[in-house]
Image (cartoon, rainbow over the protein chains, first blue to last red):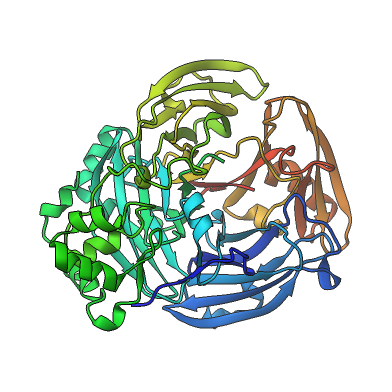
Length: 257
Length: 329
C-alpha cells in the first residue's frame, strides 16, 4: 500500500483539477474557466495561463488534448468534440487538468455537459487538488477529508449517486454516512477506488433500507463522504425513465465560506 | 448508529477489504495523516494492546480529521470511536470555528411545471464528534419585484436538515423569486443550502446557494440556430439581483458568422429577479434578421466582479420528455 507524500514546506505546486466525465457519446463536453477576481492580463498566447487536460478511462490515460491557453479575455474553452473522433466517444471516466501560471491566480475550472438528445445542461466545477501530495496545514484547516450534501428528493422517479474520484496515484478509501433528521442512521462499508478511477454509489441502493425513512422526512436528509485524505466528490442526479443526468454538483465543505 | 454492521457483507465489499495491506512491506504507508502514524506503527500497537479502542487512546489514530477511520476499520475489523474524548482534537479552533452570520440566497420558482425545495443541513464534520452546533435560522421569500412575501425563523439542532417547499407555501403561481436564509451561528457547524427544482415528470435538478455572488460575464453553452429553435428543447434564463442596489445588465445576441449583434439593455432593482425565454424573446428576433445565423448569447454586467454581479441560472425544457434541467451559470 502506498500513501501520498506529506509536504512540509507548504509551497503549493501547480494546480490540478479533477472531475467526472459522462459518456461523450451521449453528452457534449466543454471545459471552460472563470479567471477570478484578481486575475489581470495579458492573457492568451502571450499571457500566463496554460492548461493540460488528460482523460482517464478505467484507470488509463486515453486522451490528451495538449496545451491550451486562454483567449484575450482570459477565457479558456475546450470542446471535446473538437479533438475526440465521433467513433471513439464511448468513454466515460475522469478528467485531470494541470493548470500552470506564473502568478498566484485563482481559477475556477468548469466542466459542462449538454445531453445531445434532450438538451439537458449540467455544469460543475472541477475539484481542485494539489497533486499527489498532502499539505498538512491545508489538510487540517480545511477539513478536506469530509464533504456533505444536504437534501435528497423523495421521488422514485429520480436517482441520486455520489461520484467519488481518485485522481491520485495511490488507492483511495472512503465511507458514506446517511443523516436523516438530526442523526446518522447508517454508514456504508468502506469503499476503495483504484488510482485514476471513479466510483458511483447510488444512494437509493447503498441505503435502500433507509429510503422509506428519507421519504417520511420529506427528503430532509444529508449525505456525508469521509475519505482517507482529500475528498473529491460530486452528487449526480439522474431522471430514471429517460436516463438523462440533470445535475452534477460538488458537495460542500464543513466550514463556513 | 451503525445499523448495517449486523448485515451480511456483499461479495464486492469482501473483495475490497481483502485488498487492504497485509504484508510487512506496507509498514511504511502512512495511515493517519494528522498524527503521522504508519501502518507498521499501528499494527505493532494493536498487537500489543489488543483492540482498536486502545490504539486510538494511545496513538490518537483517527482522532484528528477522522479521515483514516475508514482504513482503521478495514485494517482491524473493529469500529473506530465516533467521538473525541481526549479534548485534544486539533480541529476545534481551526478555520472551522467561524462564528457569525451568513447570508445565503438562491432562485426559486413555483409554476404549473416547476416547484422548488430548499434543503440546508446544519452539518458538523465527523471530525468534530458530538459538539453542539444548534442555531437559529431566519428565512424569507422575496418575490420578483423585491418584496418579502413571507418570513419565518426556526431553530435547528446539530446535523438537522431544514427544508422549504414552494408547493406547500402560500405563494401565487407562477412565482419567481429569491430564497434568503440567514444563520445566527456561534459554533462550529457548517451550512450551505441546495435548491432542488423539480418538474411534474420526476426530473430534478439541484444547485447550491451562491451567497451574493455571480458572474459578470456569462455565455450560454451553445450556439442557437433555426434548428435549435425548431427542436424539442427550449432555453430560459433566470437572472437574480441578490444585492441591495440596482444593477444594469446587457444581453447580446451575436451571429458568429457575420459578427452582427442585437443588444438588449435591462436592469434589476434590489433583490428582484427576471425570467427570460431565450428561445422566444432573444433568439427568434435575431433569426428573423439572420435566418442562417449561428447565435451566441451573452449576458454581461460590466464593471462588476463576482461579488457584485448578478446571479444567473440556465433552465432547459425538453417538450417531448417534459424534462427540465437547471444550473447556475
